[in-house]
Image 1 (cartoon, rainbow over the protein chains, first blue to last red):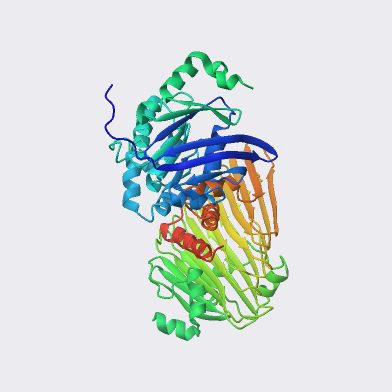
Image 2 (cartoon, each protein chain N blue to C red; image 1 turned 90 degrees about the vertical axis):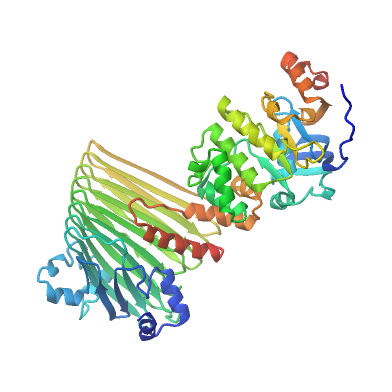
Length: 255
Length: 372
């Protein structure tokens, strides 16, 4: 195998240290450590209820998730206690797995607002995502699984975050939609750009790994019981889990 | 003309703005006809649209013998002290709008009832759409900034929707916080007729009390009542609407969006299914932004096999996950909240011309800009 002649820039975009998180009185994340560098995409795997979504929600800053210890930094700035919208303004974005329906709020209206009134861009992106017919619909109201994902990706295209969190982007999506959504997410993460020029980073939760066909993830992590237990090559981790399940994962069996 | 008209009315810039927010266009740019009454003085009665007549009720009674048969026909004189007050008035005030057979207006007729310095303004309005006619009216009700305590408006309105005819009546209230308002309205809808009644009140008012009724007497007639209201501290909005489904195929829809910021809203509704093959739905959604009262009293009453009636009512707060969803897109908490409230109030009324839907949207937009 040919060694790369250059090294990746060592610029950490997201840095999570000793993170402990409570929901109500219960600690749900224990001592989580994670570093994601500029241009990297990481994959987060783990059984249901292991804390993957909780980690994403905490990184984004949702109110129900209380950080009791540790620190989250984004581009060297401590964001542990920053409100959600300020994190978004700094360049963080999230694709929701089950976004709420907001009655009366048209998808198009929200997109125009978040794009800074760039209606042309909104129209173009909506067309690309086959969502042009949905701009006048109430956001997420009566959307199918695939339509919700397309709407989420569209919102992120308009938002243009530097760091994208994706919570199971392939769940509930048929084969035709997954190539559309996968390609669009690949674009969000600048997968078409040369490695050295790539600035966008991602953290992706996946169970099936289908999305990896579009993303070429750099690193993988497995979460169990609120901790990140092992790290490694995402494809290898996935292969292992597919063959033996999480129960066989040595690290997951500790408890 | 417009400058003269507002000068004639002696309106301050502020009061002109309040009129505009009520949907009254003194320039007549987007209106086909106009009736303006200041206190008890009729300032304007005209209409350019062929087949549509706008005149004061006094002139209408002089001009047409049959007009008296339309008075106190749907609303009774002795209904309450307010109807009696209007009935006992020495001289009748108010407007008559008649849309002749087959006529239709795309630009609405505006009716402006402006309460200046007098204590009580009373009107008696009669609105008639003859067979096949389509008539759209915007009624802006406003009081001057300087009307103090005890200012009141009593309004009787009787609507006659003929066979295959349609009337839309959009009322935007911009009263003052000391004013009391007692509209007394009823409509009769004939075969295939459509009656749309829309009410918007985003501004403080001391008290509004009304309970308009639609009598659906013709087959396949339709009534739709839509109300979008905000109650500020000190405001009592006692609002209801009633539909009586009296002919086969008749249907009614009563929709309310109510927000309290400390005031009281009583949202009543009654659909009576008297005939088979009728349908009715009543919907009230309330949002409590600051401690206040939203009291929803939806009533559905069926008398026969083959009437289908339903209602849904919900009172609550803005969901946290909705606010946070928008914040994750970069909106701060305040704009996220305002965006959700704006969506909550967004009621699209089927069959309403664009110009009127825009007027309703604009009235709500003004409230949004002021931070609800």
